[in-house]
Length: 294
Image (cartoon, rainbow, N blue to C red):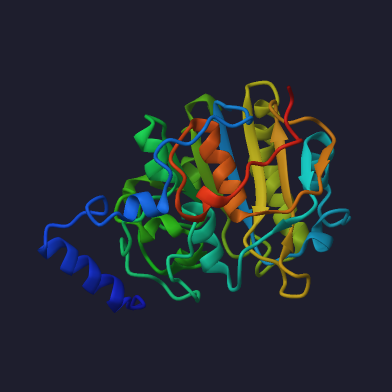
């Protein structure tokens, strides 16, 4: 399937290359990241796994009998009761969560692979000697940049839009380690279009989460690690309020926060866990607080 074209990005990149300009010489890095972020009052987990589900509002999931496992994670961990996505449709929210900016993506069309070299979570972690990877259900092959295949969709995988993130860090979900100590510092798990609740019921996604991530969640509870489950956007009927649940040893069991958070705040929190630069609007975000063990 042909990729959607982004001529303005391509021409700007070509012009910059021809002139020998870099993001630093243009002052773009300083405009989109913070070089020396202050140490924040957040934990430093050995591992963070972020799972992103699709298109459901907070009230469709939290407290619902269709999501017993996710609600059990909230009961044993923490729930953000005023967590919000940035926009609609799906794809710009994934870019916001990964890079602190929608990168001018406004729809769900497949992007030109590597169209942007903007700072993002992966580059920030690499700069600090930390590791990053994604695990993508139904991705047809390791590092595949295909637009869609079966129930897999590239639109849920923003890392492919960045030329500074190796495609080799995008794995099939089958590559998710069974020895969780071998996980990278931060990883994203992206279910396919059924498992993520987009094309299938909430109960399907909840069952998938329990089947595939319960082992890690249980391990994280005793191994200084974190599971963070969130959604890209709501169902367009609830002001974009979405579920966000945190679980693991650093999390205060049974805690909630009514502070308003968004995708940029989630990104900033992960960045501050490892002292990385702040990508895009995460520089103006705030850390998630009030849910961590002392």
